[in-house]
Image (cartoon, rainbow, N blue to C red):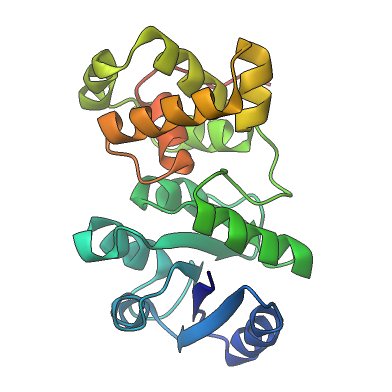
Length: 226
């Protein structure tokens, strides 16, 4: 299956570079380019994109607003957004993840990292870019807003999870893969995948990135101080 990629960046030179890279891969193709967020939302729908590489700073509708629009549209429920940011540590990343982005990637990343991020996002199997540390999202969420980010409504929804699903969610929030979680909990990777999928369905999460956001915002997992 070919991954349909939409490029959203206000710099034409960067879009051209990304297009050449993506189109060089046999399992993916660029289906459109947008220079601002509203256009990206429209093209994501028209071109049936699977993954949107979204610049967070664009004129008009920025990447954060566009990500929120894509995530809120049932027609685009299958679309995954990977935020492109100039800095790997960027305050906007918190808002992007809360808006529904599947992860983020620094613009200075290596080509293979970008291609890997597209595949990861399309599969919905992982969290962030390969260069992001496992604890980075926790620090972002801890710094996200003055009210500590915890959402009582989401905390209440955790009651729908089984004990095992909560255990798996804690491991997902730690950035662990299904194989790593299986080894830690002494179950099969398939069992872990089943628990992850059930947790996503019960919590209304689009992918693993959203599970992590929910885990921290609900207070199930607390950010480390280090």
